[in-house]
Image 1 (cartoon, rainbow, N blue to C red):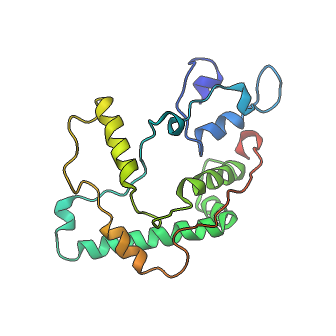
Image 2: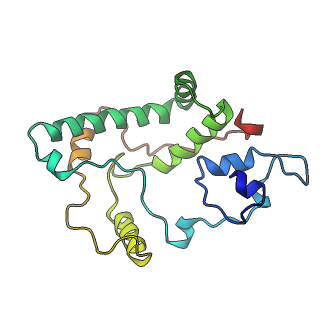
Image 3: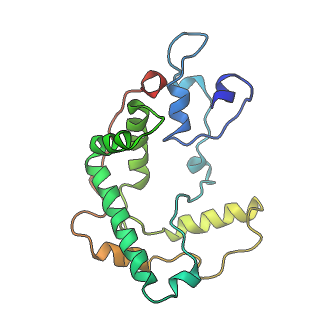
Length: 191
C-alpha cells in the first residue's frame, strides 16, 4: 500500500480486512487528515461476479488416506471452528490475544481486521467451514477464464465431509445467523 499511497502505482489489490485499512490509516497529503473511502475508486469483486474463494485448509489426498489422518483433520477443523466462533462472540479478546502473541500491527489495525474478517465468515448458513458449491464453481470458472487453471479440478477436489464431522462435535451456534457486524474507528497508523 505504500507504493499506492506514494503514487508509485495507480492501482493496487487490497483485502478489506488488511490493506484497505492500511490505506485508511494513512494521512491524505492534500488534506492532512486520514484517507477516506471516497478518496479512492474501488472495485468489489463480489459485485463484479469475479470473487474467488480463498483462505482454505488444504490436505494431500495421500495423507488423508492414511489411517487416523481424517480424524486428525477433523479435530484440527473442529478446533479451528471453535476458535472462529469464539472470535465472533469475543472480538476484543481475540484482538488482545493477537497483541499479546506479538505483532507488528497495532491494536487499531487488529480491531479493524477482526471486524472485517468476521462478516466474511458469518453468517454461515450451512455451518462454518462448509464450502458453498456455487462459490466453488465461480472460483473455478474465474480461474479457468483467467488461465490460472488449465482444467477443471477432478471430482472430490474439495470436500465437506470432514467439516461436517467437525461441526457434529461442536455444541452451540455454528451458523452465526444472528451475527451483525460491529463498527471500529480507523486510527492513524493502526495504533
